[in-house]
Image 1 (cartoon, rainbow, N blue to C red):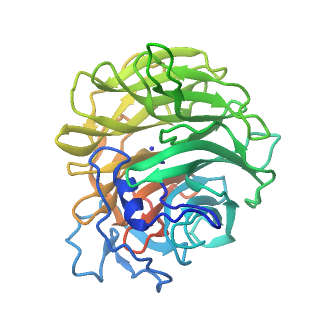
Image 2 (cartoon, helix red, strand yellow; image 1 turned 180 degrees about the vertical axis):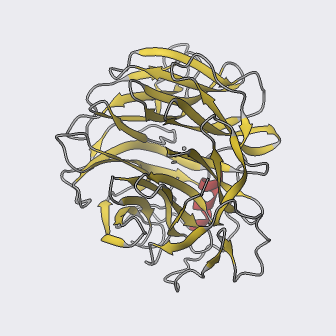
Length: 435
């Protein structure tokens, strides 16, 4: 659910300082949390200090104590060391290795591109970091998926922001590029949309012989009708361009924050709509994107709810989102039947303020991740049992935000990529639970 990487990319580009970038970070979802760490670039730093069991920072007395971790965490590994901010990573497991992509500001203050690297199951870098997208604009929000056979490699999508203020992107578009197995770009980037004054937030899911992309689109204003923000879902062509225009979701009530996943026979979209109060909705499609079912999983409340994510977990759909029903943004989760006929009552994944959920499914449980968890602005993971009930206690990773998680079935463990919020560098950690 990535998902804003905060850099202004390019050579000879309009400068865009870190003060403005921090406003962008807080403007993305519920809670409007603004980065309170110092603005100047940290630059290359020594390796991160070792973590005690559970991922608690053992060498920073200024950090408040973290709650006990439900499972031990292998000490995080720092993936980036270059000058400039690195932010908003996305991670996937390709069957043998982890692939991590992120927005990167090493080109200089106010500049940035999309970078990526391939890691072993233990987190060692096996394909060094390399630039994947070099754009004259602000490249951010990268997401990656494995290309279906007979193609080899990956599909990557990202935001291409052409104009920004301290409140966010004022003119943006969605771009895509195909990557080889070693992350080498195999063609020129494709622009999937024209520019529009909305945050685009693209996501990908691969399955049924396709790669599906979703993002926030805009219907232009017409006589008697203002412009509307809508959720679009479409397949990608082998070239990386849109195969067709796909579908627009619930145009009558606006669609925001779409996220896509695939199951054995269906494609799922989670999104927020206002009808008239904020709802979190699960929409199910067949592989040709014919709508089969829409199921509201959060409805009837006046408080805001944003940033939903969805994933298939063995026999049902798992959803998580930011929910302000308790005042502050809190991560809530629910499970829905495979056919979308029903959903369980939402559960709190973490009782305190939390943002930016992400889900990885596999093995005995599903991990839900929220960032901006307190105390100490740490990355937390809530574990889910096969019956859809959340387990007590959270896995505590470390100080950071923008987490992304992937499941490694060979080792029955999870890999987590996140942004260290003190040094603005990308970190990788992994954990497994005996239960």
